[in-house]
Amino acid sequence: MPGAVARTSTLALTNASLPFILEIANKGYVTAMQENLHLKNGLNVYRGNISHVAVAAALGYPLSTI
Image (cartoon, rainbow, N blue to C red; front, side, top):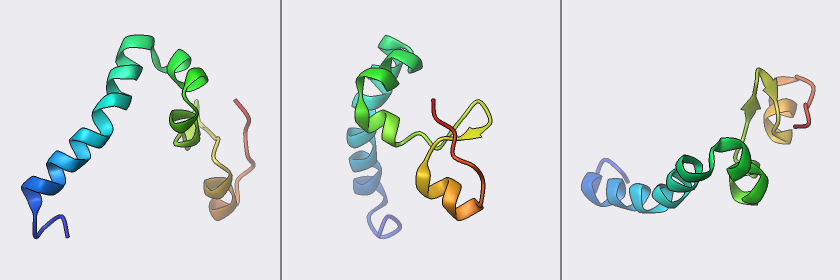
């Protein structure tokens, strides 16, 4: 789909991502992750440790809590 409507899909992705990017830029990544559950749930790896349940299970690595 993105290849068929490249401009539209790029604009949609930008519009969906920009609020999160601005939040990280304005608050710093640590505060943004603590205050926004959506950002925290999207975090897969932190400081070399797997922090997402599905990623840890798929790769066979231990899950690390932040």
